[in-house]
Image (cartoon, helix red, strand yellow):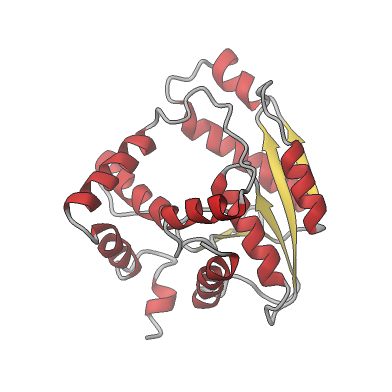
Length: 243
């Protein structure tokens, strides 16, 4: 997939849910994976012609694993003239050594988001962009159904009143397969996650389940996504409510 196609998906999401406003300063959470790097390229491209002026600032929360090499991301941000901040933390040692969490993902996510939110506030950002794509939206809904017994997923735009920060998800219309296609087409240097439980989580189970469901029932992922958009969940009704 070419950059222009990625930008068209992002532009539609941004317009449909009014994600970007004049003079926004947007922190882009960079894990080093394919999703966040695709988002960084897309927002950098969108910035050149979008009618609302906005700035982007790349931020990585370093969890404290010894084998994380961010040199390629530093080079990428320098080449795109994007400010880049790395936040050093001890999250890995807290979770895996001090607390020895049996289910570490939830606590890690909370601590990582807390560090990111603090860093972006210090950088003067009013919004943070997460690289959740369409598959993430549907997988989160299935996780909620299976393990919590409720119909829920994250919304395209979320205002965190305690932090006075707005979270946006500009990749929400992109399939994961399209993200993979973009990364391969442009040979984007992806940084492999050093987390020891990467690929062995409940989300990975649901990802495989969704892949099976979609193979056996072609189009089921798209129908689930449409059900989410029309399900009157908080934050999702804005776009369809004006049709």
